[in-house]
Length: 296
Image (cartoon, rainbow, N blue to C red; front, side):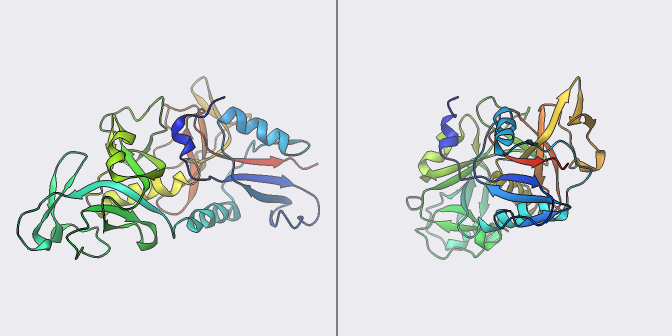
Protein backbone atom coordinates (compact mmCIF):
# COMPACT_ATOMS: atom_id res chain seq x y z
CA UNK A 1 0.00 0.00 0.00
CA UNK A 2 1.34 3.42 -0.90
CA UNK A 3 1.86 5.69 2.10
CA UNK A 4 0.18 9.13 1.76
CA UNK A 5 2.67 11.86 0.83
CA UNK A 6 2.46 13.68 4.12
CA UNK A 7 3.69 10.66 6.01
CA UNK A 8 6.91 10.76 4.01
CA UNK A 9 7.60 13.89 6.04
CA UNK A 10 6.78 12.34 9.39
CA UNK A 11 9.27 12.04 12.21
CA UNK A 12 10.11 8.50 13.34
CA UNK A 13 7.45 7.23 15.71
CA UNK A 14 7.50 4.64 18.42
CA UNK A 15 6.23 1.06 18.08
CA UNK A 16 5.88 -0.43 21.57
CA UNK A 17 6.23 -4.20 21.77
CA UNK A 18 5.62 -6.46 24.74
CA UNK A 19 6.90 -10.02 24.99
CA UNK A 20 5.83 -12.27 27.88
CA UNK A 21 8.47 -14.68 29.14
CA UNK A 22 9.16 -16.84 32.13
CA UNK A 23 12.21 -15.82 34.13
CA UNK A 24 14.48 -12.85 33.55
CA UNK A 25 13.96 -10.53 30.57
CA UNK A 26 16.70 -10.68 27.94
CA UNK A 27 19.15 -7.78 27.66
CA UNK A 28 17.42 -6.35 24.60
CA UNK A 29 14.06 -6.34 26.41
CA UNK A 30 14.95 -4.84 29.80
CA UNK A 31 11.56 -3.47 30.89
CA UNK A 32 9.70 -6.17 32.82
CA UNK A 33 6.20 -6.12 34.31
CA UNK A 34 4.77 -9.34 35.73
CA UNK A 35 6.73 -11.49 33.30
CA UNK A 36 6.20 -9.24 30.30
CA UNK A 37 9.20 -7.73 28.54
CA UNK A 38 9.09 -4.56 26.48
CA UNK A 39 11.08 -3.21 23.61
CA UNK A 40 10.78 -0.12 21.39
CA UNK A 41 10.59 -0.08 17.58
CA UNK A 42 10.23 2.95 15.36
CA UNK A 43 8.00 1.64 12.57
CA UNK A 44 4.44 2.92 12.19
CA UNK A 45 1.49 1.30 10.45
CA UNK A 46 -2.24 1.35 9.91
CA UNK A 47 -4.16 -0.84 12.35
CA UNK A 48 -4.47 -3.91 10.12
CA UNK A 49 -0.75 -3.84 9.37
CA UNK A 50 0.04 -3.27 13.05
CA UNK A 51 -1.91 -6.44 13.86
CA UNK A 52 0.11 -8.36 11.26
CA UNK A 53 3.36 -6.84 12.52
CA UNK A 54 2.57 -8.02 16.04
CA UNK A 55 1.83 -11.53 14.78
CA UNK A 56 5.12 -11.59 12.90
CA UNK A 57 7.12 -10.29 15.84
CA UNK A 58 7.60 -13.71 17.41
CA UNK A 59 5.83 -17.03 17.82
CA UNK A 60 2.36 -16.55 19.38
CA UNK A 61 2.72 -12.75 19.48
CA UNK A 62 -0.33 -10.51 19.10
CA UNK A 63 -1.44 -6.92 19.40
CA UNK A 64 -2.25 -6.57 23.09
CA UNK A 65 -5.74 -7.95 23.63
CA UNK A 66 -6.70 -6.60 27.08
CA UNK A 67 -5.63 -4.62 30.12
CA UNK A 68 -7.69 -3.04 32.89
CA UNK A 69 -5.31 -0.10 33.45
CA UNK A 70 -2.13 1.35 31.98
CA UNK A 71 0.86 -0.03 33.93
CA UNK A 72 3.11 2.71 35.31
CA UNK A 73 6.15 1.33 33.50
CA UNK A 74 4.38 1.47 30.12
CA UNK A 75 3.28 5.04 30.81
CA UNK A 76 6.82 5.99 31.81
CA UNK A 77 8.32 4.35 28.71
CA UNK A 78 5.99 6.33 26.46
CA UNK A 79 6.63 9.60 28.29
CA UNK A 80 10.40 9.08 28.36
CA UNK A 81 10.42 8.52 24.60
CA UNK A 82 8.42 11.70 24.01
CA UNK A 83 10.71 13.72 26.29
CA UNK A 84 13.73 12.46 24.34
CA UNK A 85 12.36 14.25 21.26
CA UNK A 86 11.82 17.67 22.82
CA UNK A 87 15.26 19.28 22.77
CA UNK A 88 15.21 19.77 18.99
CA UNK A 89 11.43 20.15 18.66
CA UNK A 90 10.43 23.38 16.91
CA UNK A 91 7.08 23.90 15.19
CA UNK A 92 5.73 26.65 12.98
CA UNK A 93 2.50 28.31 14.06
CA UNK A 94 0.58 30.82 12.00
CA UNK A 95 1.92 33.95 13.71
CA UNK A 96 3.95 36.76 12.16
CA UNK A 97 4.74 40.44 12.52
CA UNK A 98 3.32 42.49 9.67
CA UNK A 99 3.51 45.93 11.28
CA UNK A 100 6.32 47.91 9.65
CA UNK A 101 5.30 51.27 11.12
CA UNK A 102 8.01 53.40 12.68
CA UNK A 103 7.31 52.59 16.33
CA UNK A 104 9.00 50.79 19.19
CA UNK A 105 9.36 47.07 18.54
CA UNK A 106 7.29 46.13 21.59
CA UNK A 107 4.38 48.20 20.21
CA UNK A 108 4.29 46.51 16.79
CA UNK A 109 1.44 44.20 15.88
CA UNK A 110 1.61 40.47 15.12
CA UNK A 111 -1.21 38.67 13.31
CA UNK A 112 -2.61 35.12 13.38
CA UNK A 113 -3.05 33.41 9.99
CA UNK A 114 -6.04 31.51 11.34
CA UNK A 115 -8.41 34.48 11.52
CA UNK A 116 -6.25 37.57 10.86
CA UNK A 117 -6.70 38.82 14.43
CA UNK A 118 -3.84 40.92 15.81
CA UNK A 119 -2.01 41.36 19.09
CA UNK A 120 0.53 43.97 20.17
CA UNK A 121 3.89 42.31 20.85
CA UNK A 122 4.18 43.46 24.47
CA UNK A 123 0.70 42.10 25.26
CA UNK A 124 1.28 38.60 23.86
CA UNK A 125 1.57 36.22 26.83
CA UNK A 126 3.21 33.12 25.29
CA UNK A 127 6.65 34.54 24.45
CA UNK A 128 9.65 32.67 25.85
CA UNK A 129 11.42 36.04 25.61
CA UNK A 130 10.06 39.20 24.06
CA UNK A 131 11.67 39.70 20.63
CA UNK A 132 14.39 42.34 20.46
CA UNK A 133 15.32 42.14 16.76
CA UNK A 134 13.06 43.67 14.11
CA UNK A 135 14.33 41.20 11.48
CA UNK A 136 12.75 38.27 13.33
CA UNK A 137 9.18 38.53 12.09
CA UNK A 138 7.87 34.94 12.29
CA UNK A 139 7.30 32.72 15.33
CA UNK A 140 7.73 29.08 16.34
CA UNK A 141 6.97 26.95 19.40
CA UNK A 142 10.22 25.83 21.02
CA UNK A 143 10.17 22.41 22.73
CA UNK A 144 13.28 23.15 24.77
CA UNK A 145 11.61 26.30 26.17
CA UNK A 146 8.48 24.56 27.46
CA UNK A 147 6.93 25.16 24.03
CA UNK A 148 6.77 28.90 24.57
CA UNK A 149 6.95 31.00 21.43
CA UNK A 150 10.16 32.51 20.05
CA UNK A 151 10.67 34.88 17.12
CA UNK A 152 12.68 33.64 14.14
CA UNK A 153 13.64 34.74 10.63
CA UNK A 154 10.77 33.86 8.27
CA UNK A 155 13.29 32.79 5.63
CA UNK A 156 15.45 30.81 8.02
CA UNK A 157 14.45 27.45 9.51
CA UNK A 158 12.63 24.57 7.83
CA UNK A 159 10.32 23.06 10.40
CA UNK A 160 7.12 21.03 10.99
CA UNK A 161 3.82 22.86 11.33
CA UNK A 162 0.73 22.40 13.49
CA UNK A 163 -2.47 22.69 11.45
CA UNK A 164 -5.97 23.45 12.71
CA UNK A 165 -9.36 22.81 11.11
CA UNK A 166 -11.76 25.73 11.14
CA UNK A 167 -14.92 23.64 10.96
CA UNK A 168 -16.19 20.41 12.50
CA UNK A 169 -16.39 17.50 12.12
CA UNK A 170 -12.83 16.85 13.23
CA UNK A 171 -12.30 14.31 10.48
CA UNK A 172 -10.31 14.30 7.25
CA UNK A 173 -9.85 11.48 4.73
CA UNK A 174 -6.34 12.70 3.87
CA UNK A 175 -4.90 14.01 7.15
CA UNK A 176 -5.31 12.48 10.63
CA UNK A 177 -6.86 15.37 12.55
CA UNK A 178 -7.62 14.68 16.20
CA UNK A 179 -9.62 16.56 18.82
CA UNK A 180 -7.78 18.29 21.67
CA UNK A 181 -10.25 20.18 23.83
CA UNK A 182 -12.32 22.22 21.39
CA UNK A 183 -9.46 22.30 18.86
CA UNK A 184 -9.10 20.01 15.86
CA UNK A 185 -5.35 19.62 15.31
CA UNK A 186 -2.89 17.82 13.06
CA UNK A 187 0.91 17.94 13.34
CA UNK A 188 2.51 17.81 9.91
CA UNK A 189 6.16 16.95 10.45
CA UNK A 190 8.93 17.67 8.01
CA UNK A 191 11.18 20.44 6.74
CA UNK A 192 8.91 23.28 5.64
CA UNK A 193 9.81 26.89 4.97
CA UNK A 194 7.41 29.42 6.46
CA UNK A 195 6.01 30.36 3.06
CA UNK A 196 5.03 26.71 2.49
CA UNK A 197 3.08 26.05 5.68
CA UNK A 198 -0.22 27.59 4.55
CA UNK A 199 -0.26 25.34 1.50
CA UNK A 200 0.68 22.31 3.57
CA UNK A 201 -2.26 22.88 5.93
CA UNK A 202 -4.73 23.85 3.16
CA UNK A 203 -7.72 23.87 3.04
CA UNK A 204 -7.21 24.50 6.76
CA UNK A 205 -4.68 26.83 8.37
CA UNK A 206 -1.57 26.86 10.55
CA UNK A 207 -2.54 26.82 14.21
CA UNK A 208 -2.77 30.04 16.25
CA UNK A 209 -1.39 29.99 19.80
CA UNK A 210 -3.33 32.89 21.25
CA UNK A 211 -2.90 32.31 24.98
CA UNK A 212 -1.52 29.91 27.56
CA UNK A 213 -4.75 27.93 27.81
CA UNK A 214 -4.80 27.26 24.08
CA UNK A 215 -1.09 26.44 24.16
CA UNK A 216 -1.73 23.46 26.49
CA UNK A 217 -3.90 21.70 23.91
CA UNK A 218 -1.47 22.36 21.08
CA UNK A 219 1.45 21.04 23.15
CA UNK A 220 -0.54 17.88 23.90
CA UNK A 221 -1.11 17.37 20.16
CA UNK A 222 2.60 17.83 19.46
CA UNK A 223 3.64 15.37 22.17
CA UNK A 224 1.26 12.70 20.89
CA UNK A 225 2.41 13.29 17.32
CA UNK A 226 5.63 11.44 18.22
CA UNK A 227 3.42 8.37 18.69
CA UNK A 228 1.46 8.96 15.49
CA UNK A 229 -1.41 10.26 17.63
CA UNK A 230 -1.50 7.21 19.92
CA UNK A 231 -0.13 3.67 20.23
CA UNK A 232 -2.61 1.18 18.73
CA UNK A 233 -3.91 -1.57 21.01
CA UNK A 234 -6.46 -4.28 20.27
CA UNK A 235 -9.52 -2.06 20.64
CA UNK A 236 -12.08 -1.98 17.83
CA UNK A 237 -15.68 -0.83 17.53
CA UNK A 238 -18.35 -3.44 16.79
CA UNK A 239 -22.04 -2.60 16.51
CA UNK A 240 -21.51 0.69 18.33
CA UNK A 241 -19.51 -0.75 21.24
CA UNK A 242 -15.74 -0.71 21.80
CA UNK A 243 -14.18 -4.08 22.57
CA UNK A 244 -10.69 -4.69 23.94
CA UNK A 245 -10.10 -8.10 22.43
CA UNK A 246 -13.29 -9.96 23.34
CA UNK A 247 -14.28 -7.76 26.31
CA UNK A 248 -15.77 -4.30 26.59
CA UNK A 249 -13.20 -1.58 27.24
CA UNK A 250 -13.07 -0.68 30.96
CA UNK A 251 -14.44 2.83 31.43
CA UNK A 252 -11.42 3.89 33.50
CA UNK A 253 -9.10 3.32 30.53
CA UNK A 254 -10.76 6.00 28.40
CA UNK A 255 -9.43 9.55 28.32
CA UNK A 256 -11.82 12.40 29.09
CA UNK A 257 -14.33 12.88 26.28
CA UNK A 258 -13.72 9.42 24.85
CA UNK A 259 -14.72 7.25 23.12
CA UNK A 260 -15.18 9.38 20.02
CA UNK A 261 -17.66 7.58 17.79
CA UNK A 262 -16.04 8.95 14.61
CA UNK A 263 -13.19 6.40 14.85
CA UNK A 264 -13.27 2.60 14.92
CA UNK A 265 -9.87 1.88 16.56
CA UNK A 266 -8.07 3.18 19.66
CA UNK A 267 -4.65 3.59 21.19
CA UNK A 268 -2.81 4.85 24.25
CA UNK A 269 -2.02 8.56 24.27
CA UNK A 270 -0.56 11.08 26.69
CA UNK A 271 -3.15 13.22 28.45
CA UNK A 272 -2.76 16.80 29.64
CA UNK A 273 -2.68 15.64 33.27
CA UNK A 274 0.27 13.33 32.53
CA UNK A 275 -1.68 10.07 32.51
CA UNK A 276 -1.65 7.65 29.57
CA UNK A 277 -5.13 6.59 28.50
CA UNK A 278 -7.11 5.39 25.52
CA UNK A 279 -8.31 7.68 22.76
CA UNK A 280 -10.08 6.62 19.60
CA UNK A 281 -8.06 6.73 16.41
CA UNK A 282 -8.81 6.07 12.77
CA UNK A 283 -7.90 2.51 11.82
CA UNK A 284 -6.29 4.06 8.71
CA UNK A 285 -3.97 6.32 10.73
CA UNK A 286 -0.28 5.50 10.70
CA UNK A 287 0.62 5.06 14.34
CA UNK A 288 2.70 3.13 16.82
CA UNK A 289 1.34 -0.04 18.42
CA UNK A 290 1.48 -2.23 21.51
CA UNK A 291 2.24 -5.97 21.12
CA UNK A 292 2.70 -8.96 23.42
CA UNK A 293 3.11 -12.69 23.70
CA UNK A 294 0.61 -14.35 25.99
CA UNK A 295 2.07 -16.35 28.84
CA UNK A 296 1.65 -20.08 29.17
